[in-house]
Length: 117
Image (cartoon, rainbow, N blue to C red; front, top):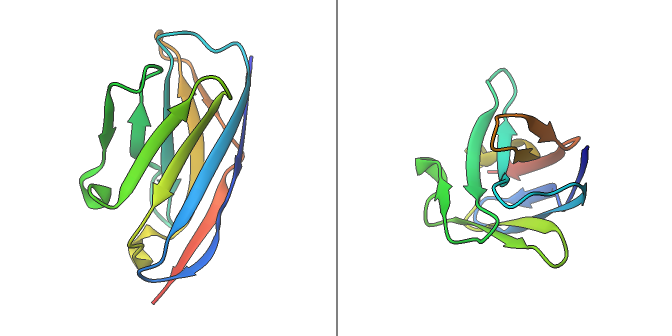
């Protein structure tokens, strides 16, 4: 089993920055992919960014490219999301995730990000 605990959400004005962190515990394997998803009110959960264990492969949804940066510290078993130039449309609950090679997904409890205009 894997446990994921997010932190770092909050309220920020448009143009500001936030850094989300996700602490992991349990069995983490080499091929596991970690990521951040978000869910805005009335919308489906969407992938924001994901990264491989080696950090050599990462990808982002188009709307956050150039503004968000995902990183992973395998020694500390953490994954972070640096969010800059935030926009009101970035508002939502952000979830940390871990996806096994065979498709099983673990989720954190989520952290609220609110960007005011």
